[in-house]
Length: 245
Image: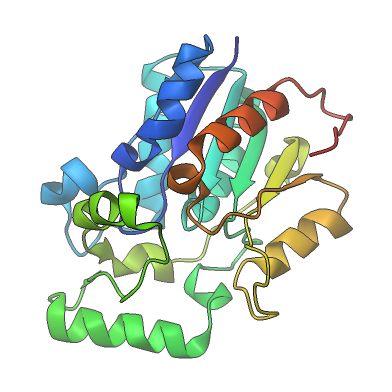
């Protein structure tokens, strides 16, 4: 039995991990899917000072309040920055850090530093015109999801606090002591400019445990069966051992 903490990406909430969490629980694992401040059912708690540090503290708060140790900490997309900060602060609680098509910042880097300049400019413009200057409405016209889940997923998304994307993560070397896995979700035929390719390449170059799940960015809602099975396999790894995808 493993303990999973599943952290959602931008504009989302803990609700989006439900399909994977249900499968993990059915398989006998303990699973938490916290919602970060200002998002999902905690949207009413949003304010201009919600930043990356707030979200790191959100997840650390769950680990501490629930007395969790030996945790498989999973971050998808934006949450890669969150889980990196968490693992650096409390590495003694983390068995393995898993990035699912996620940002992997180094010390002093923010999510917006690692994003295309034109996209960041669009986020700032949306915040100015439709987000009271501090939150970003959903910037995607097409989520690229199958029709049977696009309505559910898109209907639950909401504005995201801009400061969480702007604030750099501050790291010591502690995160380097935590075993790491990367799940590359780039679909077949993805362009060379696929945003998360550089992070998957870093994982390979640094000899992390690495897996391919080529179904699209939001693998947790597109292919929950396959991702849950993959996470269970990853959770069983010893720190120095990698297994084939």
